[in-house]
Structure formats: structure tokens, C-alpha cells
Image (tube, rainbow, N blue to C red):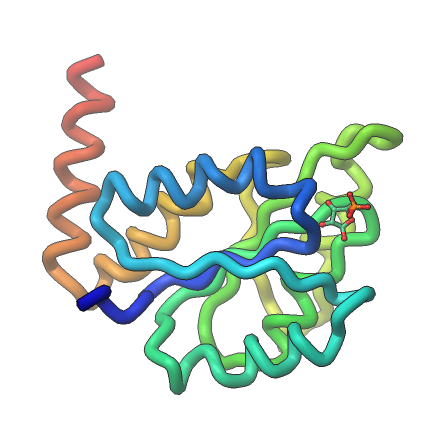
Length: 153
Ligand code: RP5
């Protein structure tokens, strides 16, 4: 039986998948059960609302939201869930991802999201695992080991 996902990855378009596969791969390396869904805040607002508002009850602990251009997905998800939301600004063809980044970091007071670097998919996975590790020792241990591998070069 598959483990209940602890991290939910949501992205605005199939076109984000090539970058976000790295996020899923990093979570898999840490052994973190996760789910992946494509849902656009603008094109599929009801799908986003339903997924985000049921996330905590379904067992998710952290959400990673990736989007590009006018990247409202993370903020909309955060509006519908008490879970922490990590956003990943997608690099874009016209504005290089600065559009995505600024859309994500300028959230109004009361609805925060964390934000990693443009295309920072692996860092989003690492941060999500660190959040899990705050209360789940097995994931804290995986981060400790990962940091040891970084230090050893
Ligand atoms: C956003 O618009 C998506 O997250 C994607 O990064 C960007 C472009 O989407 P497509 O037009 O390629 O579907 O919603």
C-alpha cells in the first residue's frame, strides 16, 4: 500500500513539469511520500480551491506551489489551507521569472508563503522536508545526513 502523501506539489501548467520533476525527485530521495497535481489558479480555480481546502484533512503537511508569469497559485492555495505553502517561481520566456518571483513574494499580511529561487525546485523539496523534520525525527535525520554529504563535498 502506498504511504499517505505528506507533501503536495501543485503547479499551474504541464509546462512547469520539467522543472518540478526535480522537486519530486528530491522528495523521493528523502523518502517523503508526495502527490503531484496540475491545477491553474486562473484556468481551473475550482479545482485549486477543492484541492487546497481538502489538503490538510487528506493528510498533507506541507504544500509546494509552482507557477509562472502572473503566479498567483501559491497565494490562492495559501488562502484555502492552514498548511505552510512553499512557492517556486518558474523561469519565464519574456521576463526571466522575475514576474513569477514578484507575484509570489509580495503576499499581503495574514497570508504568507515561503518562496525559493527562480526554478528552485530542489530547494523547495529540501525546505518541505525540513518542515516535516521539525516534528518528525526520521525526516530531520535525513536532512542531517544530507547536510553531511554537502559538507563532505
Ligand atoms: C502559469 O503560466 C503556469 O504555471 C506556467 O508557468 C505559465 C505558462 O503556462 P502555459 O501557457 O505554458 O500553460 O499558469
